[in-house]
Length: 267
Image (tube, one colour):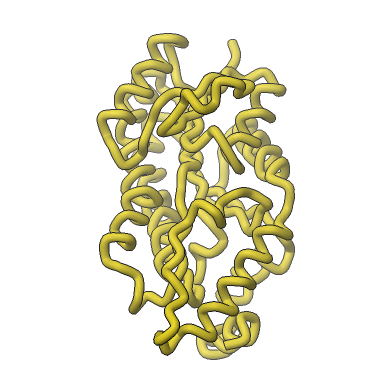
């Protein structure tokens, strides 16, 4: 029997690429979107789900289980970017980012665990970010929300291991998707003391996304994880230097690593 896969944020970007690839590999895939009617031509069914609204999470999972009788793999992919000087980002925007990137995945996990316990099996893959391993200038809130999900996964996977439920993180680097257009950008203000460095850093970040790798690489990595009997705690997918930056953070003195980042962003 084909494994049943649910992908949050499965209508575009990495989520769509993963869904298309897994469908070709014979999986029964369901994606999610806040507006599924806009994606009627998708290669796999799209169900309504907004990770910031728990009632839609419950309803989407119920829909999949009623149709298939099971739920084998959940990929927490839905997420939003946010940029800006932390001093100038409105508090509500910070909270909104955590609602999507942190609390949303936790609520999805809570909602699927009863079914996976009933099956005595399941795999939950949380899509985080290489940015979650370090505090990046003008991306500090995004780094914090993804880093928080990385740490929660470490704890969560130990708590559910006894039920034969596996959980892992996959941290992508820069991929050529529409994430830059969908994220919250604090405006570059004329009178701001951050105008120059933030403006130039924003252009650099957007150029990294535009030159990013093909999301198909993420799809293949996730397919490999699904076929792994005992997944690792953390996976990283991206350019060599992006992955190597995590190694450098572990081995270099804090101030040396900070200087490398500041040089990279020309700060």
